[in-house]
Length: 511
Image 1 (cartoon, rainbow, N blue to C red):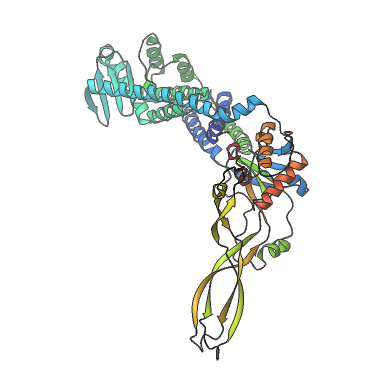
Image 2 (tube, helix red, strand yellow):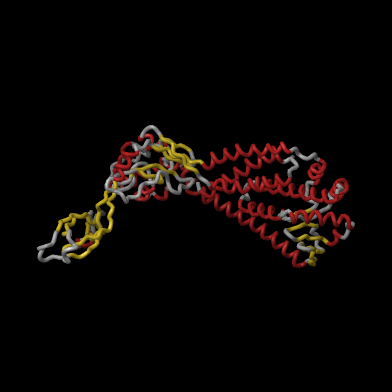
């Protein structure tokens, strides 16, 4: 699955789990500020948690089993060659991600358009309104039928409606909107609006926003009541405005925000006991479960040789050769990994020798040294593989680039360079380090992609490379042997259907 799609789904799962705790345990408590902090922190946690991955190695009993095991998203998949598939699956495999991304992009475009339209509406009201300063707060007075609301440090006032209130009611309205401003509630709503663009398909984001807006009103109501000390008058004022029709923008705070009933219930509710904060402890097992499900990846490995044997096999005459990492350095979700045997490799290093320049060897201590030098490449003519019926023999030939193997070269090295000047320092590429076969983590084809259709294409590619196989769509013994032989001949990592082997066969589109 596309990594971005996986991220969206995993983040959505986190949001659902965290909100469930809020809905079941915290929603009816009167710790308004703490509930607000909980909702905001769990949003951040839901965005970050799917980005972390922790790898755990688990040994398996035999090397035979190791060849049958690969890892995909923390799940153990056994015996790849038994995977089956069907045509619809093959179609979806190649197209489902593109279809999803297309639909998702359309939703992003629509959500972003709505957001930008609302921003421009606010700007339009500001530009057409009259500005009045009240300390660090700006009043925007307009005769449009927009109601009364706040947005960051701005309070927008519908002059016709605002003038119908008494002075006491005007002060109450301004105190309520100032409470929203001083508590930075617009930042919360802007964050939720941006997340609504990204997660437009997820209803939990919309529910998160509704809950945060309710908490904003609870907090502002509590601040105004503490300042005025008139809970009955304040509640009566809210009830008298329930039939007031006002236009509320998506990311603005409004005194008469619905539902009024729940706000009245919170006003008269007894303050929650401190011991009820222990309910937050239920977040810990949920967080641990999400980390286990989303962040833990397992790698099944066969028991390694003893440390002494391992070091002897790798470091014998090989002090500078880099050791293989125990795990993929940057494993990616949605990809599969397994240990493969790496082919033998001759390592060439630059070495400088004092080479005898020739002439009289009297007084010169010379030692003959055989070195292994890299091979050369040259263009040669070769008969075309396909039938050729031309009368001109040259028409049936083709030029190909041929690389010769490493060659032995003998040089005369001067030993007593302090006593003679009959030498010249020359640099040679010397292949004197031979890497033994070692196992390394390689990306392999995931089990769910090894369908009968894929095996058929694999067998056809092997047949085109000279292997005699039956196209029976089964990962039988002959097919496995052909794969191993192909890997050995082409010096590819051996074991499993690794990505390098698929590329060499021209099957990299199946990766």
